[in-house]
Length: 295
View (cartoon, rainbow, N blue to C red):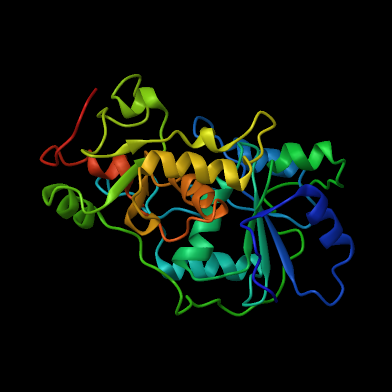
């Protein structure tokens, strides 16, 4: 299978792919809808209606691991656990994975990063505009009942991490950079008020990591909820970075979810090479000895 040229796929392209897939390799659609305030809402939405053949990915149960109170709100799962999840979904080496949500890619981008960068699986894209774009395109919809999460299970062996897989940036890496005067350029994907330490409702401490720049992930989207054109994103990120190279950039947010949205946007803009601090602010602020900025 050819590696996708873009990290995105349109609703029209996906519809064509589903109707004309003969000889083009397996495809697995993953519904990543989620609500941080109601963690059962995403699965319920999937049960009520989803893109045909889509399995459901729960942010806490499938895309995150065990929380210790010091490793952030959405730590990465153990490799063995994620291997079992991919096996349950039927993802194989040549499977094209299409992730979508109803929040502008907020949660789908997390699975995209996990597969492409953390796991080294090149064949993964995000549905641009998500569930809303699919509905607007009048794409077919199916429903499910009960606790079913894989309407069309595929027998598959485990998908091992590729040699192209990359480890996320650690808290120790970020602390070393801060203490050294900023060898990494952090970009924080949270809204401006939370970045400034105001209106914090998710984490016990408000503020940001010293030296971080702020780019709210929703700035990557246009009025319709789709990603802005690549040229526009390139101009905006280039202006934000002021000449710094993408390979010096480390993305973070509150818990390592919306940061993936900025990372995807940079790749869409033709600025590859940035990395993710998966623990993000929720891990960083768990230790009061770490330097923090409020305001």
